[in-house]
Image 1: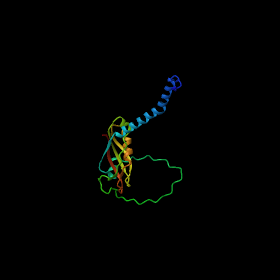
Image 2: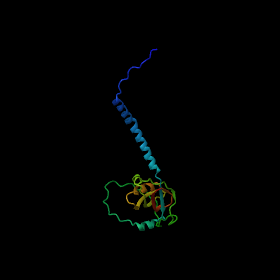
Image 3: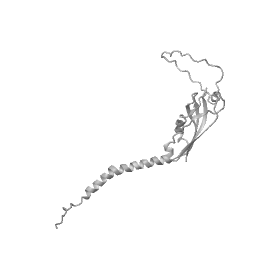
Image 4: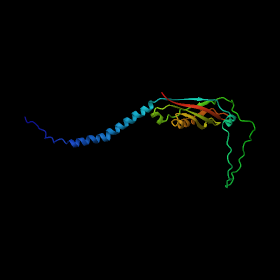
Length: 187
């Protein structure tokens, strides 16, 4: 019986195989490694648990606020040369001082979303506290937030300001101010 023989094999071209392997690594392996690295970096950031602890002092009345922060007189300005705006009737003013419904009571917080932990502080595993003075509008939104003190300085101030501006308080007739401490802690 006659045996079939296969044609002779050509010599291996190692360079062609090496080039093909590097092409696969370049187009499949490297992107796969990058995607896996990004996935695990994101999980590492999500794994950092933090808490934001706030404490709030009593609400200041408008008189207490005015006494604490007197208004500086502004220098007179030159009259404008444009046409004056039409007069709009205003509500009559009363000579009675405006006071919150419950003087000295802390405003009632309705919604308190946590501020975002700054990524730079998260990477450096920093913790800190920011003391802010909030100006609360009559409709209950935070109209202004001013940093009074931050420890450590330069790490958490803008995150705390941005975060407290999303807070909502119960509407009150006159609004008010409140001092709050926002504490950033890693768990």
